[in-house]
Image 1 (cartoon, one colour):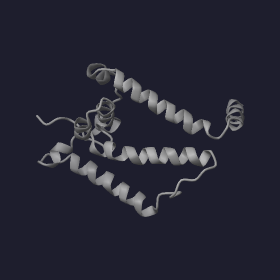
Image 2: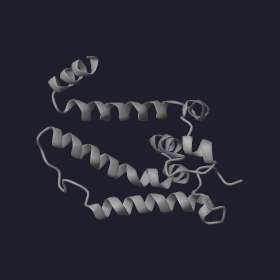
Image 3: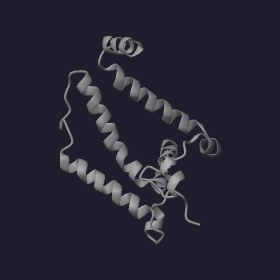
Image 4: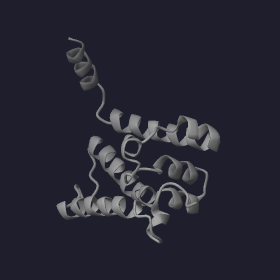
Length: 148
């Protein structure tokens, strides 16, 4: 019964509430990351389940550290932690803007990602995951942990 009541309450809200709330949450996370120091971030940052189980970096490993460096204005360090996260942030912002505009009755061209782009993105992420786990230079620089 609670699920039905919850669905009814959400359906009564304006359609723009979900993207605006998501954007505000993202800004709050960026604000927290900007305000905390490295030691606190290391304690609060979630551990990657894939890395915990396998010892290998997934495409997202180092993403929190990259965002932390980025909101503090250190682009070089952000790229060092996770280059793909930094490069995909504009695409994420575009997708959020598209969602917001669609919910407010406006359109943002192009309306969807072509299948080729989605497939290319999947291949790039898979290749990045493989390459960043290779122990040889220059691929070792893609790892989320600094080289020893």
